[in-house]
Amino acid sequence: IDVVHLTQLDKESLLICHDRFVKIIGLDGIVKTDINRCSILEFNFKIESLVCLADQESVIAFHKHGLEERSFKENDVNQ
Image (cartoon, rainbow, N blue to C red):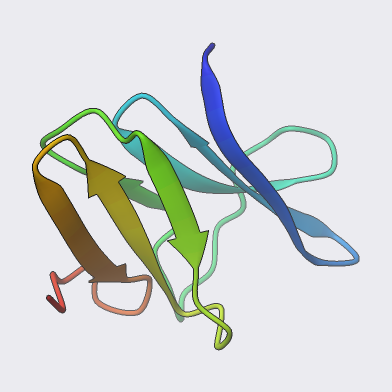
């Protein structure tokens, strides 16, 4: 896969961004499930770069013509 961004969120989880997806995975590479937030965000464009906001509850994905902010809590578009 073509990894765009990789960040360690805590001692047991990573945020990985590739193609149109942002995923929270464990150190074993398996998608983590959490009842308080989504583990996979799917965008309708190819992500060129990504910023994980300081609260670690949302990300800003950049594409060729703009950006989109999404929340892990509701998987909603914030901006």
